[in-house]
Image (cartoon, rainbow, N blue to C red):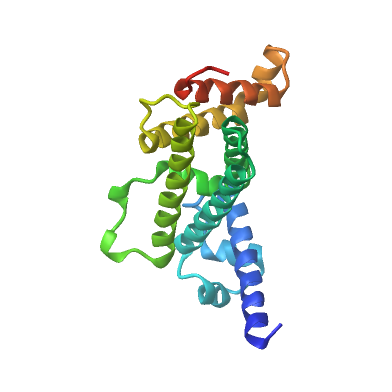
Length: 214
C-alpha cells in the first residue's frame, strides 16, 4: 500500500469511528441534544480532529445518511442482478430495505422525512448533492425493475413504474416500521413467526401491482 493510500485508509478509519460514536449518541440523546463535545468524548477524538474531517454536527449526519443509501443501493442492485425471478428479486429488495432500516435508522428517518423545500438548492454541500443523486439512482433502479416485470407480463400493464416506486417505498417502509415496533406481538397473536409475518406483509404490498396474485 502506497503512502497516500495508507494515509487515506487511516483517515477513513477515523471518519468511521467519529460517525459510529455520533450515531450512537443521536440514538441515545437525539440529534438536537447531541453536541460536538459529546461526540468528542464518546469517540475519543479532539474537537479539532473532528472538525478536520467534518464541518459540523449536521455534516456528520449527512455522511451517515449518505453511507446508508450507498449500502442500500448496492444491496438492491445485487438483489436484482442475482435473480431472474421478479418475485424473488422483490423479496430480496424488501430484505435489503429491512437491513437498511435496522442498521441505518438515522438515514431512513431523514430520507423519509426530508422535504425538498428544506434545501437551499444553490448552496448544497457535496454530500447532500450525492444523497440526492443516490435517491434518484435507487428510484431509477427500482422503476426499471418494475418495467421489466411489465415486459414479462408479471406486473399489470396499467402500472406507471416511477410513480409506483414512491408508493411501494412508502408502503414497505411503513410496514417495516410496524414490524419493528409490533411484529413480535402480532406474530404471537396469530401464532406465526416474525419472518412469516414479514413474508405475508410483503406479499400483500406487491399483490397490488401484479397480474396474478401470489
